[in-house]
Image (spheres, rainbow, N blue to C red):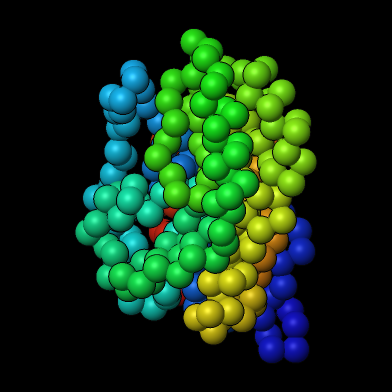
Length: 258
Ligand SMILES: [Mg+2]
């Protein structure tokens, strides 16, 4: 316990140990999307100018839980997805959530967009080199404004070869796609901090949940971090794989603990 009677998170604990004592100062709860609020995996197909992508929706149960939680906490989404996709996914609950999107590139809050980065010129150059690559493993380019996301059946040597010449840009293979963005300023952690400062939340008022390597900086920027995959990313609390989505388990725990 600290001087204010609030327990500090030091060890990694099972989510069942997230009690009221930890939640005392929390005002903002931030969720990653894929693998947390919806299952991992994207169905995508591209043939010439024809593009197809399955849009996932948030389950009714999760929407209900988010509505309950939003009466006490501000909710935000921190995702690599584009704003267009997030608005569709969260259509029923956009009055209660904000978005930090495309790995911290911009935020959306009550209809207002704030652009945080401008990698346009570099990205145009990288894009023109990558579009020359023809490889059967490439399934399609996910439409994004600030990041490049190329879905592939497996790793593609030619993409990795091109990206070796762009040392200021990461090229992360996440098992289903390459995410390409600026190392210095396009990550979920920087986006989290800038959102939090703009909307006047202190770090110790934020709880975050993520499941992948690209959530590392995001979870580091939260007072309480929850990992839904403790092999890929560290957290103060962990949620083991089960038939329920990690966000569902976390939201139930918070509502019970209050
Ligand atoms: Mg994820």
